[in-house]
Image (tube, rainbow, N blue to C red):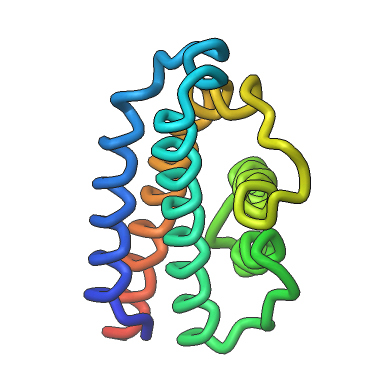
Length: 146
């Protein structure tokens, strides 16, 4: 069985980051581009959100003995393979994990349009991820009782 308390703590962290980013969801490309403080807050908070999602997935994968992912993005493929995430959500989370690599490793200049689009269009995907994990925990708990 997975460590429910640990995952719920991590999901609470995700909620906190989510509410912090919601303050910036109406940031325009120009506002983002012109203010390094806004860039840092948004990029770092997104990074922490993504890493929290990967961390939760990693705990589930380890606890359940699923295959070891090859990358952050592959972590979400494992959850797809194990029917914890659906195909659409897995694909979105894979893209988000790749975005994290750009932010962390400076593979490319972070595109202001992509960041503002994530704020406007993709924050809800973190809520969907949380819901999918809560469903999994409930199902795992029920299976553990039988």
